[in-house]
Length: 348
Length: 276
Ligand SMILES: Nc1ncnc2c1ncn2[C@@H]1O[C@H](COP(=O)(O)OP(=O)(O)OP(=O)(O)O)[C@@H](O)[C@H]1O
Ligand SMILES: [Mg+2]
Image (cartoon, rainbow over all chains, first blue to last red):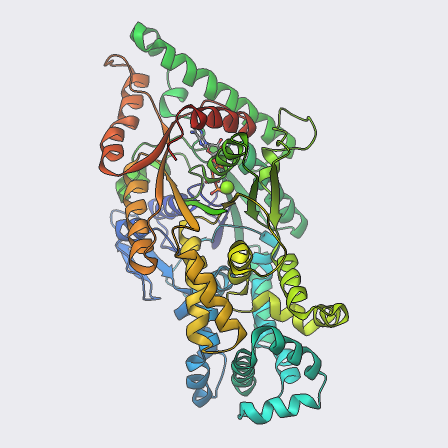
């Protein structure tokens, strides 16, 4: 089975292993196979954004390469959590007049600024939106660095909880924060909020109440949405790609990610071990005899290093028993332009 | 007492360098606390209290800790509330539990609050000469630094505001806190490091030290084989980048597969000619 028989490919992995670059390579490969592909990424380095010709601060998809000679279109999008979260709110409420109030709230501002939790959430949310667009045959989602995969998968749930009634009902409903505080005196919230206000100060609690009050007035219909997201993540048309590096720490992290995916019965299509070896390591060894004698010690050091590294890697693959596809990605010296990323596609 | 933050792009060697710096300072006789942000511990790949797997046994004056957001938060609340039953009531509330999970930038504030607490005379006593913090990668590190000012602009007065104000003051004081950015001698990492340092200077008036990691020795002679060509290309412009910036310390590429071995190699190198 091919990597590309899925509608959605979610690239997961620990931080700093080249996940974004690999995701772009994956998308390029899909277009070479004639598919129209969208690659979505969050918080990329500015360099990578410019390589792709993408601008930050919009939340829009952009055509990077048009179809030519039978290849498909390559689309790209940088997910902006701030914009995406606002769009999410706007999609999910009819009360347009309440939206302004919420957006003006200072805590909402804090919530939407580039924080880890809102990154996780908006990544999955953006995927759920794009998947309905008939323009794309394949969507590749480059996820934020995984600190906790369970938290990542649960991030929509967590965020809905925030936007959802229970919490808000508890805090109460009235547009005036002063009278709200008074009302708390009579509710179960009183204890907690007065403790909170001892620690953080009254103005923090006031702002918090206004925040939840705005949310309550929105009355969002996100319960059903939560199911849609879970269906998407576990769908037959969704595949996962694990990207990691063959060092001690990242292998261990990969192991944990694989276990979680297996546990959830999510379809791990392939595991990419990035920077597994230099190109020469996999090439015809006969040329190694012609290395200058002065350079030989350098070669020996590198050769035994990568031999050992790959032995560990092979052991790991046996152990975790990924019958799924294993891809060893070589070290590329300069990945600066789209053409350079293109070099990766032949290994996918 | 000095607080040290170590940051840099993902995978450049932050954890290795933090560990080596901690070991070096400890070997000079200082009392050191090496910190990483949880929830997952990584320093346990390098250190172990028992002799296992060639891991490093930390000397008595080096303590290693993983800060867990919820634990540190409880510690703070407990410090402010003093009354134990209040604290329990607070954290047993299911509403509070949910709120803590999503509360805007609370995690960042809690970590910074803890790190700067010795200078703000609050919280548990931390009696160390060096607090070395293996911190977030660059992008997330900026959000970390931005969180106190962000909260201050949201909440204009009260305890929260005051806390954030003092945190920020400490973070910006070069006498109290120093910053190390680990980077690699390659084109993109160097450009990104420059941009990152620009942001640190513009937004916070912070000037970090640069640590250049994974430098490879040039070949003795030019050769035509695949190995020689690729190796030379890889290290091609390395020296260029190194000379353009004010580098605090450079480390060679260590051919150690075990992280604990690598930290031992790096510590040796750091001890050779420590510049501070
Ligand atoms: N000087 C060096 N020579 C060779 N390899 C190195 C060197 N420094 C670090 N490494 C290797 O690079 C990898 C990443 O190192 P380390 O974990 O210290 O980086 P990090 O910046 O903390 O990563 P992360 O962003 O994932 O926390 C490890 O496999 C380590 O062995
Ligand atoms: Mg690290």
